[in-house]
Length: 507
Image (cartoon, rainbow, N blue to C red):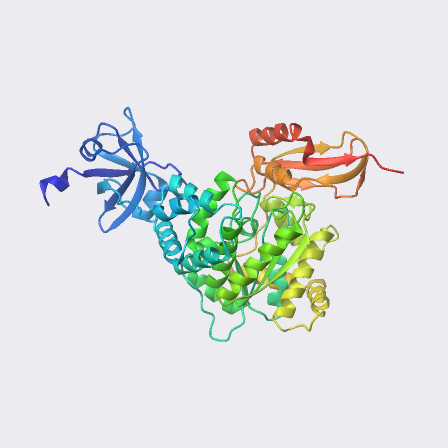
């Protein structure tokens, strides 16, 4: 070993700092490596421990927090490098990320071709992009800035970065997805149970919440284990015909979860990236037939029928380009679905519907039956227009509940969703008719209460559009696991009266 290489050594220590998915290394500004390499704060540093290496963002530390001979690693960096405490690491400047040239070109209006998409997605998947660079990519793709050709190119590249399930030649594999933007719309667990109970294969992988208070993976995690490895998922699907897993645990289109994290922080959505996200994960899951629910409403993610039709066209065409049969259903997105908004609260709604409980939300049941009916017809076990009757019989007879329990048992067992510690009722300050609900602000309110990070947190709805209320009627109940978050959400509600509009009843 040369004397020059020895100068770049520092021992690594685990600092226990959670930087989510971004690997971060911490060094003293006056340590010999920083001085010798000319490292600066927020620079990109290649960290090498043994045969493993990872590109990290650099945070500079002053004072006695670290010794001159040590570099600290965040939890993300520690997971990727897997060192032992005190192992020696070498450090050097990370190579430039050439694909950022394509991102800059896109920001200035130059389209992304197959090569550009492949290099960008590959570099993101290999951790070469800092969060700042990822933000530039997300901004470049935001709104409707991606053409159909660009979307197809990005989708192909995203599929190629992860694993891909193969369920056997000629095997029909069903899947569904909801575009989102509708609080409480947790139909997937119900639909999967109905479809699988009728002998069809439906290996469902779902994302975490992006800008909403809960995703299907967040909700299912309050009921059973969703972090399933590749082999475990295959075994469960072959046994039960279905699963309800978090897609990130099986590396299906892994760059998508990285991009989603930044989209969530920036509160930005991209039509093309949404299509690429959905279709890439369906292709990677080995799906052949996909049903996509597009809620349409003034405060949903998709606000107009015109936009819904355009998005539907992109999803169908992108799916076709990658060998999928895609069908889209436009649904009512004017108000939340069910009673609960937040992982555990939504899980209780799901259980109520599956168990045919008297308190089951009728709107959630109806939407789930409609989607299940379409899939049963796509899967060929029901004739055209006969799917709804079969879906209803499957749910009413208890066969769907039995299948759901079997799936959860195979995934590690069914557990009871947690309950919140703190609650606060929100009551009407006038009488009248509930005339409008702002889905976006309702979602924000539930998120500020702690959802989805605090599984029991969120919001319970006690009224629907068109309901007559009196002064003092219960409208909503806030749920939180920390008193501070409850008060924070309450303050937000008081400053946003447009969350729910009550109009005087016209006689």
